Image (cartoon, rainbow, N blue to C red; front, side, top):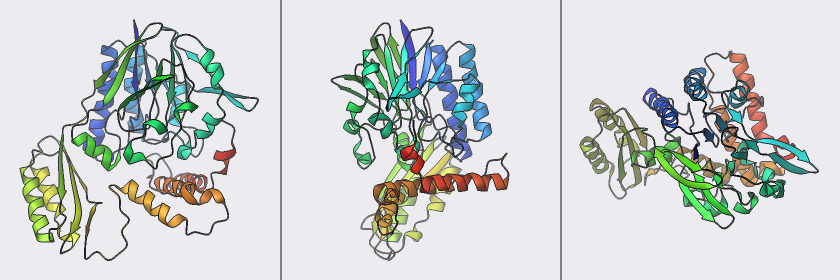
Amino acid sequence: MSKFAHMSDIHLGAHREPALRELERKCFAEAMDMCVREAVDFVLISGDIFHSGIPDLGVVNDAVKKMRELRDARIPIYAIYGSHDYTPTGTSVIDILHTAGILTNIMQASMEDGRLRLKLFTDPETGAKLTGIAARKMGLESKYYEILDRESLEKEGGFKVFAFHSGITQFKPDYLSEMETIDIENLPKGFDYYAGGHIHVRGEFHVPGYQRVVFPGPLFTGYGARDLESTARGERRGFYVVEFDDRFRRMQFMPVAGFLGAYLDLDVGGKNAMEANKELQEKAGRLEVKDRVVVLRVAGELAGGKTTELDFHAARNGMTERGALWVYVNRYGLTSKELTQAKVLGEDAATIERNLFRENVAKLKLSAPELTGESGAMRAQELLRLLRQGQKSNEMKKDYAKRVSDAGAQAILAKELLEEEP
């Protein structure tokens, strides 16, 4: 019996906080060690190994050390590009690791008569046949599926795995209802296992023609408020181990110890600022926080007073003094009757940004149609994400400025993304 590990959305380097960065490193190291202990024949990563196509070299160095241990144990790592794996120059750290023999990018594609032809990569030890479609910048991989030659893939025999880094319309979580996804019918039928990525919620789905469409969710905790909150509430993170011979036999989810979490959800609706602050300090003081990552979510409309009267600093310091590893406060849903400025609602920064761009991009009088509507909002949010990227420790200031400028130009114009050959 053969077996492989399926993981996705590792997002190494996603966190700036030293405590989370160390936990993130340990989580990845433990996952690699578990693959060795489980004696898997290979590891398949469905995108977003790193949080950036040009990650911090210290993060890369730590990751490569663990990946080399798998290589030394004769356990190859196969991967596809995720949505975070692109760079303005076109060369990602994934390409460098592929060239160095640390991993293998299994998307091998060519264009024939206007159709995208994928080559099945055969794992030499097990005979498993793997292929997949990588994510593209700003979720534009749907063009790949529109021109995919599915028939040739469906005719191939043997144990087959299809890797992808996209949301599937039929399986889309409610909170991602507005996210651009692909229809399940765009995937080739008859594969034994569909190794999904990009969706940060674990899910196993079965429909006729597409058995075992599996999303492992993030290996550690992903990034952003929603991911942190769900992990702190106890949602298990990890990867799958899949057993097979000439066909699928069984699979098992393997939890990885990321961090112990503590979660406090405080609704201050209808209370004045003094009452809300008293409740905040009391409940935060009773929370078990020692050696835990704490997520504090405060929402609701204050009946009186200002939101600034809630002393989050005192609550955070108090929990830190009692041994909390790190305290994250989500107050994006907090407002008050005295708040007069326009407020775009959302439960985290990314949602607020997306809603803000949707609301305002339509007001702009732009000649290029791809810069208006939902497409324009996507490009605006991508531009904002690129502008947030800090200067690398080994990067000159002028090189950093050029990199951000070039990336920004691609995010705004992006015509080549709609016209380029795969």
